[in-house]
Amino acid sequence: MKRRLTGEILHSFISSLGAYIVLVLDSFGILFSKPPKWVLVQEQLFIIGVMSLPVVAITGFSTGLVLAAQSFFQLSDKGLTAATGLMVAKAMITELGPILTAFMVTGRMGSAMCAELGTMQVSEQVDALRSMAVNPIRYLVVPRIVGGTIMLPFLTIFSVLVGILGGYLISVYIFKMSPASYFDAMPVNITYFDCLTGLIKSFVFGFFFSTICCYKGINTQGGAAGVGRATTSSVVICYSIILVVNFLITFGLNLLRTNSFSP
Image: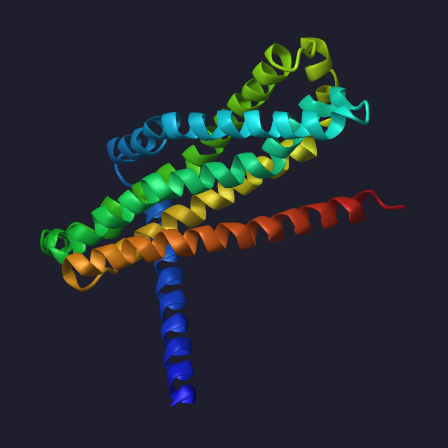
């Protein structure tokens, strides 16, 4: 019985993975052969990017406050409070900025994306598009993938800047640090590699959250209950993939950097 159940789970996983890869390949084929209308992409850029600014700002600002407070209290008894700004900026650029932004955008826009496509699927609107000779991948999926992949790096940059600002405000106005001591260590110790790491992560996270949510939405079955299950599973899967991919990118890039600069 257990062997049969394991086989069914494995078969379901392989089938889902194959269908996901097919969707991604179809989307790339459409994007580079017959891309969707610009107005569709523009709409998704606005919905995913501009509409997510408030929640990203709150997340980045509060994270910067917490990082600055923790860093200051941990470093004050060691006489290293001047490194507070550096620790805030380094953590926001390389790790917390990309991850938390991806989490918030996935929870806000990824779930909405999946629910919208899932509702269209179970209400047979997707089949209606096919009956009118409209490719649902080109019309529905590709604009969302392009919007999510493009806008998440910009949202991450915004989150990082707001986080550094939050750390600055609490450090200068609460902990009475000088503005110069907060910023002085950043240009020396923050490298282009750190910035590139954050951008690569945000680009990859944007691709995964948009493709996974679109896949779960366009393959929804089971009516309203199925939409709920698909939305929940899409967010959980995206969060898990983001955490795993974050480790792989961090490990891979740092290993590549070490080998490149080693004698």
